[in-house]
Length: 496
Image (tube, rainbow, N blue to C red):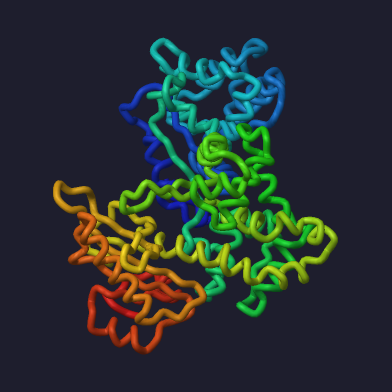
């Protein structure tokens, strides 16, 4: 089944959905279940609507409603799209689910129930009903429906198939729709300038809805227009992007006390990324923030980043750039922004934007680059790509490794594939290389094998002539600028 031209990218996701819908005559009998999830605004509904249309299936978008109203809406939608009208009135989910399965006979067809968490909020027994009807003797046994449950509340969707949940073991498809990667996001926004593309990505990330639905299709025309674009869109109270970060938090059903969660996110955005740092920023004990951190992680709003070299040190990162931008730039200046002083606010936060947003975001993009290109760069799979901190007993200082890459675990010393440093606003020179070589030496004394490690220097500001001369003679030294980060084709072993 060919992906519609109107669906940008999503080739892998479409292939997974197409494989879930076997062709007519397949030996697979009975209805099957798939689960699609992902953070809000990622285009899940758009993708599944396209699937239902391409495969002549059924699409139902749930709303917040009482159980009785939801059953009526669902039954009416199934009847209208299949032409199969129930002989008697439908009053329960038992009857509605049986009606759904008996309405889909013959060729396999998708049945999409979007925003499924809205239904389970009013009808907690619905997953159990689906389990029964999908099981032996249920109405799904004679149906060709390919039931797809979709939702944005990750904490709810994640529990559908976990532990002792009724639907555990029933799903033949588990698909997570993620934001576009930084290269795909640049193409989606129609931005060809790598610097401008990264600037925009550091604010709105790879969320598809932020270009058109939330931003009126406004794209900066060039680097010289970026500041004006920020003022007229993200910092403009009349544009939906202005309040979006607030809504992302309030829409999560597991977040009942937004104040503590806002403070935790503010701490991470400010650079206090460890458990102790967050607790100190919030003014709570470490044990008291364990629950908010776990909930934010379950909701897909933050990610844990263990130290790549095994130190008992975990950092947290905000997953959605727009939330980082809100916490670092907008939250404490909300009154001024609402009063129309966006230009003055933006002028006053340039240092904060570069240090708290651009710097960390650039490091994350560099790690993504290595994950995507590991086979080309190293000739083998990178088991772990993260960051790390090493203590230097001689200088009594810490060396931060922005890009730490290791191979798979082995019985002997664990091999380090690469050590990297990433700087958004600094021109990279030989001093940065010396720091990486010192880290390489320290790791050799910590039961790591760094003999064949690549050294990688990333910069958005450029490289000195000295470091370029060194790189020309060392095949395992890589200088990576913005142009290479956004390059689509295969890379050469060494280039500035």
